[in-house]
Picture (cartoon, rainbow, N blue to C red):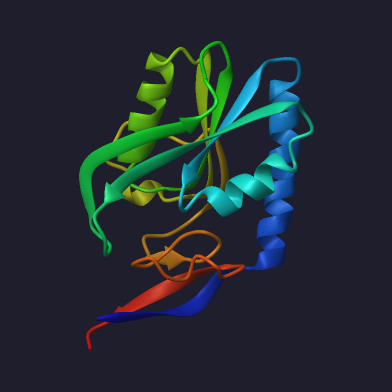
Length: 176
């Protein structure tokens, strides 16, 4: 099988404008409180980097390696987490995620960060795909809602590829 991006869903310019709006809203919502942003690797790294530059507050940055996909496109329903960097205890934590799909990863992250002493945990994603939600979780901040199509670009991948695209596109998977 191979894949190709067949349609641009969100252009580089549209993403930049939306990230700026999210940063302004987060700045207002968190003014005066200790904030840590937890970027989810690898997919959320591009979004996280752009987002924190749009938050006009002191921010502690940490990263989380989270995996619920074993390759390809089907979620496994299991989530493995590895927190890297800053201690979240005593801070409000904003998770910067590329996409909330089934919600398994987001739910596991929220639970783990609260267990580690976070004062609160909110979820910020570039893409929200509520049509596939299987866990009881929702985005507190979402860039765009996407239909039930496979997407890649701007950090999101298909089988490790396409993360470098400056836009988000729909991916068509073809049999070889």
